[in-house]
Length: 255
Image 1 (tube, one colour):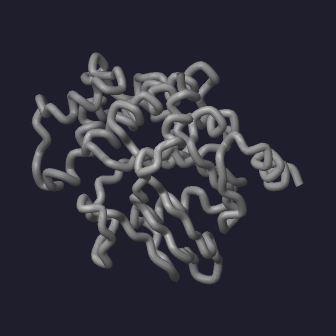
Image 2 (cartoon, rainbow, N blue to C red):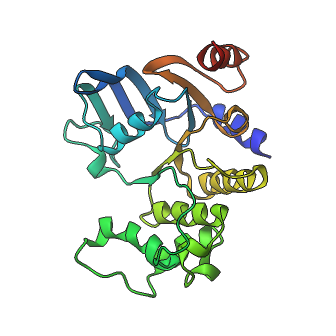
């Protein structure tokens, strides 16, 4: 089922780039984290990003989100009218972000509903209170199968359930593009598959464009429509089925 849907995506002729990154550089003092990144992210794509620790994967996500300043280059977004504008930035585009999450302390007091409601503040303003019957929060929780846990402290959930709640928090603003940073880290194989199947289901139902950072090549090969390998700069870009990808991975991780 997943392979067929990915093949169908590849056959489309009218792909629209939502993000254009040109010669982007991110440096912290004298240390270069990203160098000369050139990348187009297309509508409906599942872009997989891999690379060793310190290769700039998370920095690239933060640069797209506007959380890491560029030392050089540009990141531009398409607006609703499908035209680029110099004034368009991440503020103008509805982005959802799922950061790396490790098990949340059991004593953390926040309820599941309140954690997801935090994602609404970018829309309603930080000084306003989210209602207990907010339909956006309910829809987000239902979409990940966590509505029945809405009154439970998030620290009392399993690791996989916590990750679903964090995905719901990213979805509550109805994003056009969803960025995920190691969404299955520290999860066992069964839960990992459940999370990735959920992400793929959301991709199909909500017509999301997804940028996925993961160190698991099996996930990229099964779910991604395009893969880039990072080592400060993009050293390879192509389809996950390309046999050259494994050669690049061996060079990055085992030499």
